[in-house]
Image 1 (spheres, helix red, strand yellow):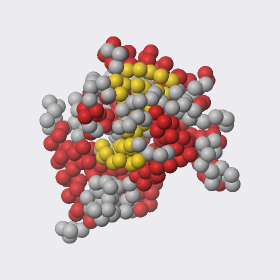
Image 2: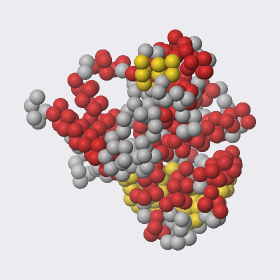
Image 3: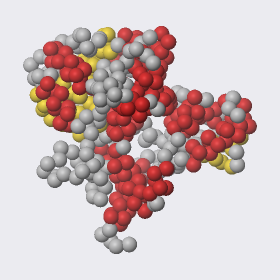
Image 4: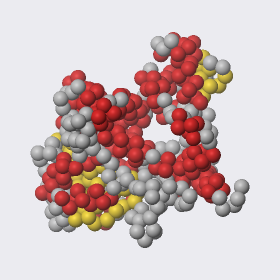
Length: 441
């Protein structure tokens, strides 16, 4: 192949990214992970460096772009993972069942324990194994692998998977109908969503999760956010933002922080901070009584964390904090509601306070001149936004459309929201997969 062709360039990117990751893994006692291994690797739960996050994005983006370039387009168009199979595996706790026999379990036994008819279960597991989730050790004998063990019911990723394959996917079947509705289609009101067409509920999904009949879904979502935070390396903000410069005793309010996934990361990394966690009543009960005693008891013992219920549409957060931190809050709401939330934050800010919005910052696939780009762009010939290597931001953007008529936003859209609320854009912090937009008074 010509040395300067796009195909050659993609192959080079793949080789270099793979070498970077291989070198990183070689530092661990186990070396490079074995895909068939049913046990976690020592580096799986560690915070990825920005270099390794970048390498994974390049690797995924280049592999997908190379396949799309060279494969027949009709092949690429229909080669989509079937989420209903993943939902079956999660609902019937197949990974948990397979943990009983790491060497492999016959379909007869898996069927007996799960209650799923054997032949149908075989078809589902064989599909997932072909996508490298589970492995078929021998004919009709299946075992966990490095991917499927992430779906154990004890791993918050399983809660996130159930949220995606139930709440998001099921509501997504009503998206086309919602867009065709002459009133709902053009509307950005939070009550005109595909989720509401599907669920027939009068309130938003977050209000619904506070009701007795949906409380379990709300609790599951709280756990799902733990898994989501680990997946997107959200904890990179604990080291990528200069919290140490705030000084001893500085106060950080995690507004709309659920059970406090990120607040716990700050508590562990920066014990000099005084932390405040604010969200709806059910999440505060779950955080205070279940999550924090189990996962961050030292912060409770040392009185470094305060839990306080809030409705951020009618109340302002705890006043006078040094940082008001909002992770994946604004993406839950349309623009008008976001401005209301930010105005409430502004009322509580003191001179020197800052608001830190931690979310995906949508990037265009169109390449800009280096002097005009606010982001580190992917190396050519990749799309400037890494393509498939950064696809989660677009997946989540569509999920937010389905669930709340909300969205992920560009940097300019965040700046406009801040301006409408009376806040001044300070800077963008690139933190790997996510970014943080800082505002001041």
